[in-house]
Image 1 (cartoon, rainbow, N blue to C red):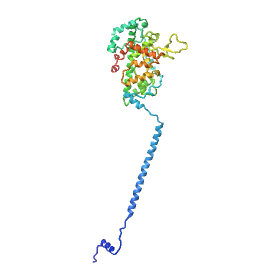
Image 2: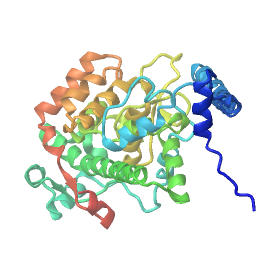
Image 3: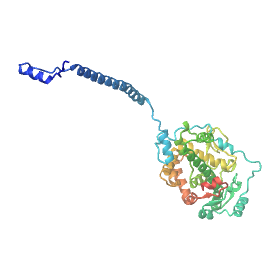
Amino acid sequence: MIATKKINLNRIKKTLIEKGFIIKRKKNNFFLKDLKSFYFTALFGFVLIIISSLIPLSVDIKEDINISKSTIDNNSNVNFQKVLDGKSIDQKNVDEGLNIENLFEDIFSIEEVPTDTVRLSAETINQLFKDTKYNLEIVRKSKIVKPINLSLLPSEMRNIESTKKKKNLFIKIVLPLILEENNRIRIDRKKLFKILNKNMNSEAEKKWLNSKFKQYGVLNKDLSTLKVRMDIVPVSLAIAQAAKESGWGTSRFAIEGNALFGQWTWSGEGIKPAGIDSEEKHKVMKFKVLKASVRAYQRNLNTHGSYKKFRSERANMRDSDEELDSLILADYLDKYAATGKEYTKIIKQIIKQNNLKDFDRVKLLPTSIQLKNII
């Protein structure tokens, strides 16, 4: 049996070196070359993937930039939130334009006088006020008025010799009417903010909003404009203008046409002023009831372009949580009469001399739960 010997490579290597041979280890570069090639290929592929993903992104960004150049900013949401917060808004495009198509629709709706309506005499009215304890001195102190609504002025207004009694009777008649219309606006204004504070609105609420846009002649359903226009007229200011325009209820326009505020018309029913040129086409608007005259007056101040500064100043007072000051607001009614600034001076003089600001905080006794909630 032949014995096998294990080959000792180290001994062979040592022997060869002693005999002068040079021994070197041959490196295997095949694997390294393949590995290096794999790394380069993977890196290049990764770079291609990144570039491919960035190309559409850059295109989108470029398109967004181009679109933004031709897009007009829609600030309705911004103004909407400012309306909710009661903050000031950019007045540049607010309260612009007027759609008159449905402006007086609700006023015409109250023009139907019941068949039993009669013109009460001054004596009867005074007795009615006495029986109901309706006294202006008490009103000034208590700040409460009973809802006594008269449709017509007494024809004897011009025959009352005592100026004090005449003024007293006139204020008693128009005060509840002005308060009633202001309450109606307050109810609408409260409902407006209730709707705006909701995330979702019912069809009935949307229909109501659309009716108010028409009622106030608001273009493009602009909420900011509706907020500015849907507001009250201070009681003292309304009484003063009614007194000035109707001669404390003694004018022909007031007696015959229930026109308390001397509003003109070129197309509707009216009374032609005496002594004007035949070429003049305007008339003084006439109404079937006093209530319609008050509402038409408020609608006029709340929508007509001539009183935009009046509404703007009123909105500024609201934004500053100030009470509406009739003496300040009167300055912005210089376009109400041809006499301009002289007219506003007279209005302020009437307010001061008759202490009409005493009635600005007066409340009308509620006739419903809805009214009770706003008092």
